[in-house]
Length: 263
Image (tube, rainbow, N blue to C red):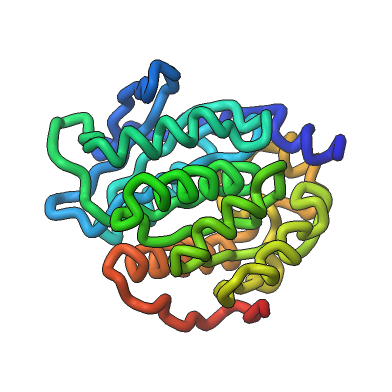
């Protein structure tokens, strides 16, 4: 547990070069103010990915992954928010309600109808909460969930059940079990869903591969799996982007080479 907490203690990633596609625009759904980063692809966008970083991390730690998603024609919205407190249920409900009521991009354009809830580590629990709330408020908007080495929090199982119970796909990319994933404690919950989830374990992957080159030295030391390597990081980004696009376009997620299927 201590190692998992320490993994997020350093939230600063190396300063990136300016990205003209990235827009910093705060959100205040239901009066809950959070900073947010948007990545906007050329129109028309295929879908919206709500991408959430992990506990005590930041959107700066997921910029490489976000860029991969944008390259597939997806709008990416990342909230810089503390993921303590069981997945921030009030913020998750407020964000889902804002989307259901017609949240627009920073430039005022309408967001694409298909919404993929995605998150890394403890951020996956927040993503599931947003997905569960969206399934209740605007089920036609929810395309599915994409979980990146998720870590369980209170309420995570119920949120997954709500998403799967609506017939929406739950997709998961898992790393080798380790301290920062609580040794893969989310896998039993995924296996218990009312319909089969689609999961892959990328050989040699670490808990921090979703962050890749945007991770921090303290996180690497705390997780104890070594620094993310280019091969597994590239595989995760490719599969995540392919799957997110499949979800946005209403296609069955494509089979992917480079991973071990999880059932």
